[in-house]
Amino acid sequence: MTMPTTPARPLTLTVNGTRRQLQAEDRELLLDVLREQLGLRGSHAGCRNGDCGACTVRLDGRIVKSCLVLAATVDGAEITTVEGLGTRERLSTIQEAFWAADGFQCGFCLPGQLFAAEDLLAHTPDPTEVEIRHALQGNLCRCTGYQKMVEAIRAAARDATR
Amino acid sequence: MIRTPLRLYRPESVAEATALLDEHGDNAAVLGGGTLLVPALGRGERSVTALIDLGALGLDGITRENDELVVGARATYSRVAESRLCRQHAPLLAEVATRITGGAQLRNQATYGGSACYANPSSDAPAVLVALQARLVAAGTNGSRVIDASAFFTGAFATALAPGELVTHIHVPTADAPYAYEKVKHCEGSWPIVTCTATTTAAGRRAITLGGVCTTPVEVDDADGGDLTDRIVAALQEPWSDALADGSYRAAVAPALARRVLDRLDLGATR
Image (cartoon, rainbow over all chains, first blue to last red; front, side):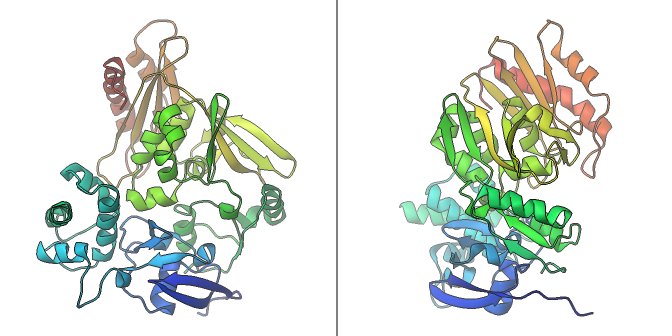
């Protein structure tokens, strides 16, 4: 079955520091534009309902679930995806902490967890365990039981505030 | 991707927005934070050809006008939670905003205005707006009208908005009276099953507002003496059932939650 289409409109997004010009239909999700048009497959499509958080990106300084955002509504925005957090050779502080503490298993939810953790530490440099768990509320993980994630975030905070 | 084609409109004035809504009628939906509408469109539960995005209307602000706060329909929960005005003059509104399910992401995207218009009985916003005696400003092609929150919610997923109307602002009376708020939910990622607000009225009476128990918020106060819990039980004749919980459970848990919240109010706790 072919899907009916509508004309695409031009959009400009600054993604991981690079200005990207693209065309997207009004009905396209930011998540799908990032993954399919820009090839940034690190933002994962889990539930497409705003529950799981695997599609989390930073949009104009705030973390959002990109499955809930229509790309056409964020023309001109600045976006950071997990590809912009660190590189294979040089992980970000929070990536390093998750790596060191075994803070992930299958890794599907990891991009979203990293953004949630980073957002927490940006606002609360020395969080309590309750604050850490509260910050992970919007990100589901079916492997770890969250304990190692909490430890990773606590370690990252300890290193940063030492 | 949403399966059916649609066009996004991004009006720059309320008049333009209401004209578009009037023009497209049932084929249009109003897009606020998108957290409820976008996935519903993706699943095909809703299908429209026109989306009217409130994002360019400048409705994301929070201001004070005399003895009221005016919260724009597009102000996110994060914005409300961080607002000095809200924390100071409508602390219940700010506190509940910090405790909306879905993580910081959801709170950076979703709004009281959107949740009010969706009118899911199992959500925080309706009963909190009723408890605060908020008023919603509904704009249509013939101008704006103000609707009391207690009259705005007319049923499950139903509001007093007429076809062609959209909410632009929520007016919340400033208050520094003590309050307490609690909700029952069985996991962190759940919609609330029952919410309960206890407030102290200007006349010094204790008032309870329950959300999630019936299709619309239930208000009970101790105006003429008598036991509040008995009154709550009497008020819950037709409890609401959904996939989360049966009505009988909601009706059973509501008085217990109310007692807990009243205890906190009496102890001077603010949550």
